[in-house]
Amino acid sequence: MSKELVVVIDFGGQYNQLVARRVRECNVYCEIYSYKTDLNVIRELHPKGIILTGGPSSCYEEDAATCSPELFSMGVPVLGLCYGAQLMTHVLGGKVERATNREYGRTELTVDPSSPLFADVPETTSCWMSHFDYISRLAPGFTSIAHTDNCPVAAAENAEAGLYGIQFHPEVLHTPEGTKMLRNFVRNICGCSGDWRMDAFVEENIKAIREKVGTGKVLCALAGGVDSSVAAVLLSKAIGEQLTCVFVDHGLLRKDEGDEVEAVFGPKGPYKLHFIRVNAQKRFYDKLAGVSEPEQKRKIIGEEFIRVFEEEAKKIGAVDFLVQGTIYPDVVESGLGGESAVIKSHHNVGGLPDYVDFKEIIEPLRNLFKDEVRKVGLELGIPEYLVFRQPFPGPGLGIRIIGEVTEEKVKMVQDADAIYRQEVDEAIAEFRKTHGGADPDWMPNQYFAALTNMRSVGVMGDERTYDYAVAVRAVKTLDFMTAEAAQIPWDVLQTVMNRIVNEVRGVNRVFYDLTSKPPGTVELE
Image (cartoon, rainbow, N blue to C red):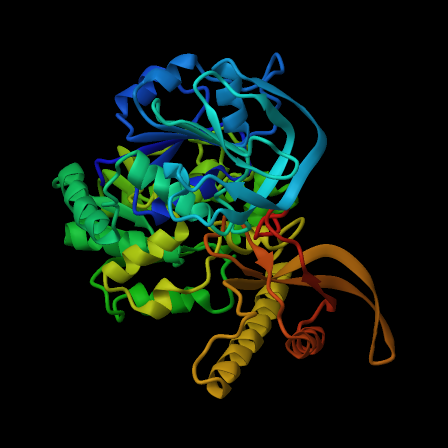
C-alpha cells in the first residue's frame, strides 16, 4: 500500500465516498474517518493532507458536528468542502450566517487563477452548489479566491498556513473542473507523488497475505460475483494449496448462475482452486419464511452464510482464516469508518453475527472501490468477461424481492431478470454491429429485474388476472456512489415487457425504475 495518505474527515455529507473516490483518481490513497475520531489517531496516521466533507448541519448550531482548532495547526494542508469550509471559517474566527437565498444546483463560478488550488482552471467555469449558509466574514489570514453572483466567498485560502475552503462540491461531475481542483490540492499543495497503483497493490497484498497466513489454512467465501472472484484469485496467487473456496448456492442467485460459477471455478475451470459447492437452497428459504423487513433479511442471509462456512470448515479440518470480498462502499454504507448514517447492512459487513468460528477474517479488497477491484482483477489476469460482469449483491435475489422471499417468487424474478438482461445484451450487440463496435450512449453499467410486492388486476386471454408487478432497472454510473437511470430504448423495453408478461408465470405488469442515486440506491432494498 502507498505510504502516502490523505484523510477524509466525514461530517455526515452524502458525497463522502465520492470525495475519497476522486482523490484516488489522482493516484493518491485516502481513507474516511468520522469527525469524532480522536485527533491523536489522525496524527498517528501521518497524513499528507486532510479533507473535510460536507454535512447536513449549520456549523454555528450548539450541537453541530465540529472539530478542534488544533486540526488546523498540525502543519498538514487542510481542504474544507461546503460544510467543511464553513466549519473551518467558524472555528478559526470567521463568521457563517444563514443566506438570504439558498444556492442550489449548477452555478457560474469565477476563480482566482493565481491560487494554487485553481492552477490550470479557467477563470470562469461552473460548479455545483448546495448550501443554506454562507461565509459572511473570512477568518483572519484568509482571502477570497472565488465567487458567484450570490456567494461572495465561494472559496477562500490561507496559503501560508496551507488552509483552503471551497463552498461548492468539486467531487461531483456537475463541477467539471472539480477533479482538477482536488488534484491540485493533493498533488501540488500536499506534495503527494501519486504512487497509488493497482499493480503495486496486487504485489504488496500478495506479500502481506503470505506473511499473515503463514502455514495456516484459509477458507474463501466464493459468491461468484466480481468482488469474491477477485479475492479468490488474489488468495490463490498468494497461498495456492492452502486455500479452499466454498461456494454456497443459497437459491437466491440469478438463473443458472450456480452452474456458471462452478464451470469457472470448479475442477474443470481454468483456476487451480479447491472448490466445494454447497446446495443450501431449502435451508435459506426456510430461514427467510415470513420475513419481509430488508435489514432482517440481510442479517439472516449473512448469518446463514457464516454457519454454512463453519460447517464446511469442520469437514475439511482446522481452518485459521476466512476470506471475504468486502469492498470499501460496503464498509462505509454499513456505518463503519465514516460518520454517515447506516444506508444498508452488507451481508459481509454489518450482517455478520457476533460469533464467528475463525481465528481471523481476511478482506483483501476492503479498502477498494468497485472500479479499483476490476483493475485488480485485470492485473491478476482474470478474463475481462468475468471482471466486467454486472455487480450482484451478496444477499442476492433476497433483496431484489420486495417483501417475503419464497421459492416461487425467486423463480419469477430469475426468469424475468434473464429475459431483461438477454434483450438488453442483444440490443447492445446489435448497436455495436451497426456502429463500428461503439457502445450506445444509453449503455448501462448495471441492469436487472426485481419483483415488487404489488399485485394488480390484469387481463390475459380474456381472463382476469391478479398477479405481481416486476420492476426493471438500469443505471449509468462511474463509481456506483452516484447513478442515473439509463435511457434504454423504448422498443427494447416494449419487447422486455411483452416477453415477461407472456413467459413468466405470476407476473402481469412491468415497471421501469427511473430513480437516481441519490435519493435511491442501485438495489431496491
